[in-house]
Structure formats: structure tokens, C-alpha cells
Length: 74
Image (cartoon, rainbow, N blue to C red; front, side, top):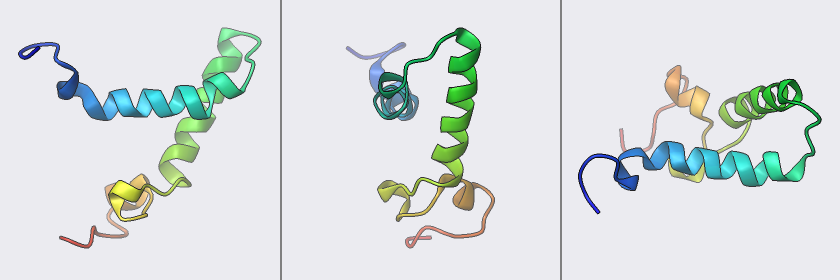
């Protein structure tokens, strides 16, 4: 498969949603859509501000985005 709609075009978001499903959604029983939305907001905040990522040199995404750290190869 290649061209429009190919999985590699959106691999970063595909990986994020895999992580969200297996580290948050499947581990918690959400009672309602509003409960799920609140839970996902909390997960996304944690994912960006607290969780270190090996692909980012064990930094947090918010640190790189806001420029408080640089990747080692930069």
C-alpha cells in the first residue's frame, strides 16, 4: 500500500492512540462519554508533561516543544 491514506503517513498519531488505548482506556472503566473525555484530557496532560519518552532522549514532549531542553543531536 502506498499513496494517500497509507499508515506511515500518520504513524506518530497511530502510536499515540495505541498508547492511549493500552495505557489508559483499556485499564479504566469509564461510566460515560464525559467521564472518558475527562480521563483522556488527564492522560494527554500526563503524556505531554510527566511521561518521559525514550525517542526524545528521555525528555518530556512539553520540554522539547517549549524549548527548555534540546535533543542531544541538535
